[in-house]
Length: 322
Figure 1 (tube, rainbow, N blue to C red):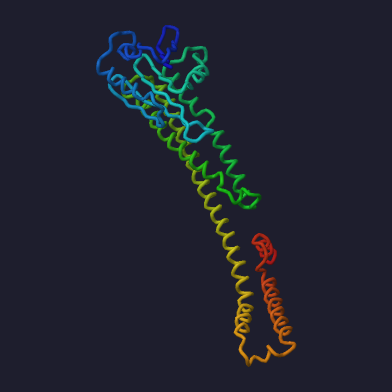
Figure 2 (tube, one colour):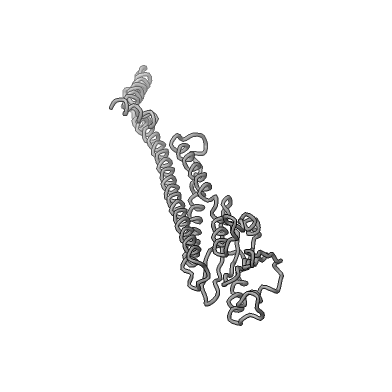
């Protein structure tokens, strides 16, 4: 779907056209009401037409008397899903190509008056860009809350979740995607704030700079979220290593306890003739008693040294002793 925003006597005029219209090329002429268009501008606009496929990046390219660019907005709740649009800015008009049908409901939210006065094209574009990031901070706060819950589960090792691949991996991917998106969107805002073609007024350039600062703050939040999720993944790996170490400790203890018994079995399994214990009627009972006594002493020593105590209880006990 196409949207054409032009200046009118009483404010902005917004018109919607189906995607198969052939009027788009003529709209890129200068001024907006003139036809036919300049071949150079047609060529630039067809570069924009080639971007009808779903794009996953934001950019703005400034040419003499025209600015063209794309908007690839990641869908917050899904991985690798993007809303996509392209735009063309000239002195008296803005043309937006909506590739995934998400622009229309945003345009409906933009008030065309500000304190009783019709808004200008710069303010309209600023409001549209702001709507793209309107609830992003709330979304990242929700991701942070999920990471905090994941951290508690890993620390407490509750249920099956402590052993599964943590949710932080998905959040790290989403945070990286958002960070890249915000950096690209900030570059688009800078191009508009620089206003090389002098399309906007001083107030418009100022609010575009405010937009850039807001997007940079969101980029910082996404970067922090990415680093936090990485730390959480490392914590998860440390817990997994701790579990493996406890398992190896148990196997080592079992081997240490039963190794002497294996030596006894091998020793008497040779069945030498001159072994007096083999012919003594109490030989079997004596060997069994000695093996049992060794097991009892070994287990008692290990229990005394807290080898079988859970690490969390061991930590609590150490803190009490301090």
